[in-house]
Image (tube, rainbow, N blue to C red; front, side):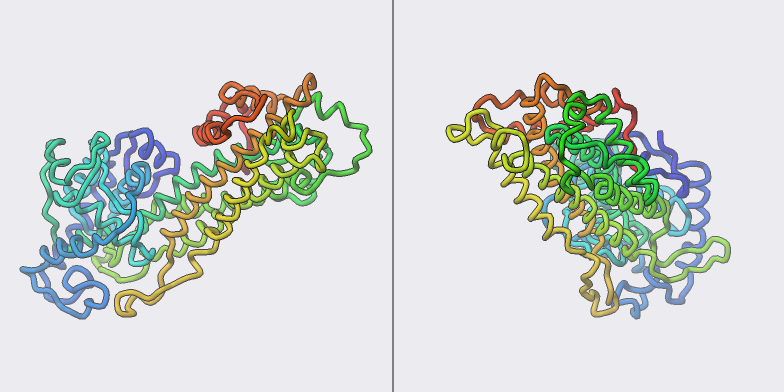
Length: 509
């Protein structure tokens, strides 16, 4: 069970709730903080002075004063009018992450929401009601307004939700779980949607999956070093020690452990080749830099998942309601753009290794890794697919945060586009997972041709795991199912887990 106090949530907690359906409850501290901030809002609601989003309209309507008898309607209308999302629905793990993150932010006690409303949000989580949230429509400032509004619709008995895999109305989802729709009170609509929780949820999932992907990239690279009869000299720890980037040091250690006791590498240790091409020799530098970017994303996400991102913020110590800009997604936008580039680069260098594995002029292997050239094409076209994927990534990797389009009649005149950056990071990640699957397919085929020589401790286990699900390519067959199988082998974490069981935990930083 995950207990929320607004301050101590971890990224691993988020993943447990998102994918393992861990139950979530408020701590006593969290409950007290929520109650204290609500008492301040109740006092403000009785006053006749303008306070943004409580007794005024929103955005460019902030100059319009709202009378007491219309303030509840103001909050409901906020949700209805802002639920404007389009596109396919966000995945369940992202939606569950977003609900958790919003509840944790509210538990900090700076949003002035009622305790019962936060408990309703947690009821959706614990009863596995998944609001149907369109993926597109947030510019990443004033919070993820459109997608979070679709989340809140279900709490009101509106909108749509997934329950047991079926898309039904929000009203039917609540009824099936014995819940009653809520009626929003003053400030509550704003408190529920004015935050960065969608982009942070997508970013957290991307971060988690990128940890696994970066380990898988090292494994794929290790197999390629074996198949291409590369040298371990470039992985001498002294090289990394005199540069001392933590990601490079970690990758060097991984490559040495993966290829330890390799009979293949030992067989050509005295060959005339002085050094390998960059795609082999610079694995520590390139993979390592991507890992350093991943660490930076982790640092930012760790702060954001425990942040108050509402506006106005209710200050319990003084009773003030202060308008600011914590809803602006720039911190997440920048690190997601950084992470996009880091992941894309893993695909770029992997595609170059794939090319070397297939090109008879660059390897000691049969052309296109087939024993029957001419009649068979072997794995020729898999490199085309890898090339297409990395080329697509070069479009997606353009920084979303470099763009800004003013909204709300120029009241909101700079926005982050952070949600777009986070979604693109996940798309790039999936593309690179397919590229690594192709590299593993080719490298395993290359290792087969070097038998009876055997690869190293980790690479041998990787080869064995690949061959347990995809057989050697004796003659031409449809490669697409093999690529999909290896994509799933990587994405599930299985190949990383199998290799780590032999060589120990692979390092990220």
